[in-house]
Length: 303
Image (cartoon, rainbow, N blue to C red; front, side, top):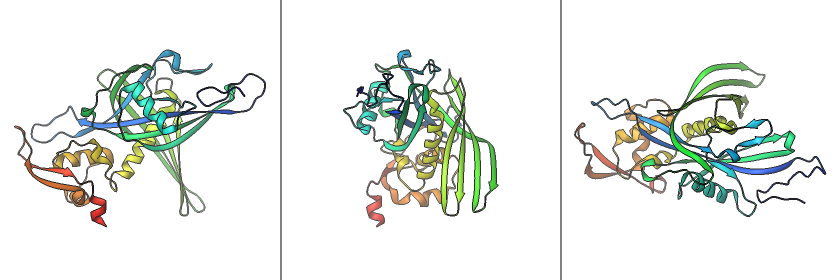
């Protein structure tokens, strides 16, 4: 058997079996103050994502698909001697200089490249970080690495009934931009509901000017996961400094949940996750507010 260090079999022409290679992709989110600042109130937050531009020799998927010049999620092949989790940590460090970041597995994707007789199985990871605590820089496999603002909007929706439920198809436009670059991609999210069974499928809409490797559908999946998790977990606190005001925390919740939240509802939701301090915020523009800490034992206390 002719096996490479990346965990897949090289095709020497002796057979036409479909062999597999394994990759990892990391969706790294952060949040910053918006540039449109009203001096009378705290600024809203903008969700950001970390992307890399890989070096040219790493971008050709096959004879027909060159990803040259495209931005992508950090990631790469899993070496034969390492676990998938170890590969995610290594690739993130090598391409972006980020380390000691807690990542959770997001989803596993698969695609067959018939002309290469190869199936690529990619495990995606997600993390939320306070970007002020890290310095990103391109590594040996990346030509460039940058933070981009990211947002997703529904631009089309179609729902039709089935015998035992319904099918809802929504088209999302994902916009990724900074002061120099704007990238737009489209993803179709299909929700099939049959009785109490629900299935979701993300389909990438081909775009030669979009992100590399169909990564837009991974990002849309991560955005939906964030929205679902933010109201019943403490995931939002990964974006916060050690001390923060309730308003600052609410701004982060709103950018993750993708809509404004009523003050009373929000405060009731997060109250048990907080520890109040005797400190007040500093700032010449705004009235001082009480500062809070995240309470890491909130789940134990809830029981």
